[in-house]
Image 1 (cartoon, rainbow, N blue to C red):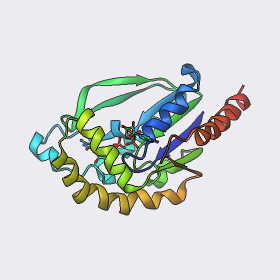
Image 2 (cartoon, rainbow, N blue to C red; image 1 turned 90 degrees about the vertical axis):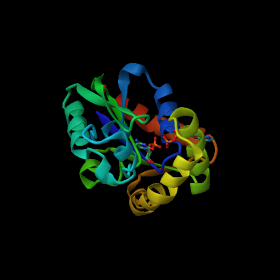
Image 3 (tube, rainbow, N blue to C red; image 1 turned 30 degrees about the horizontal axis):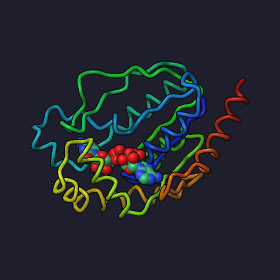
Length: 205
Ligand SMILES: Nc1ncnc2c1ncn2[C@@H]1O[C@H](COP(=O)(O)OP(=O)(O)O)[C@@H](O)[C@H]1O
Ligand SMILES: Nc1ccn([C@@H]2O[C@H](COP(=O)(O)O)[C@@H](O)[C@H]2O)c(=O)n1
């Protein structure tokens, strides 16, 4: 199995790049897991308390479970991936079955920040966009798709997102094999990654 890690700041375009890569591949050969599914279970807290959580700090993620799940998939076993709700800031009761595939893409802001996780990655990508562009994208997305308002996004950006980005995410860029700029749709970078994946799939046959 080829395991590809895709990191980068919020709104950098990770999900979009992953979607472009996946669209080009046969569905039965690629699986995707998102770091967002591994936010810790906060059922013991009230909704108001959950709203105060710093969701950009590595401690908010159950990396042990994520690492265990990647190891299981590498070992040919399926996993039950938690389902996360941005609306309630918590895991839901249900889970999603993910089957092992030839290619596994693991995507999320902090994917390159954890040494134990990095060891499991065969190819490390960092998706890059300027911070003002990321904030604009995040504002639009969170208001339209994640039920947030202008004040919530700006408060979170100033209080937790920006400082955590500077402390944990931006420095993890140094571990990337390839940095993908997304100031515009970057077809060339996606094709490059596609070629690497194709070679690896062909080698395994
Ligand atoms: N290259 C790009 N140019 C313009 N908008 C983009 C680009 N890449 C992503 N977007 C938009 O920005 C928003 C955030 O992108 P997304 O892929 O969800 O980022 P991430 O997963 O890194 O948070 C989405 O609404 C997406 O459509
Ligand atoms: N309940 C939550 C959990 C996380 N976030 C934010 O999501 C961002 C990471 O997701 P991307 O798809 O943007 O990479 C992260 O910056 C958290 O601030 C949230 O708003 N609410």
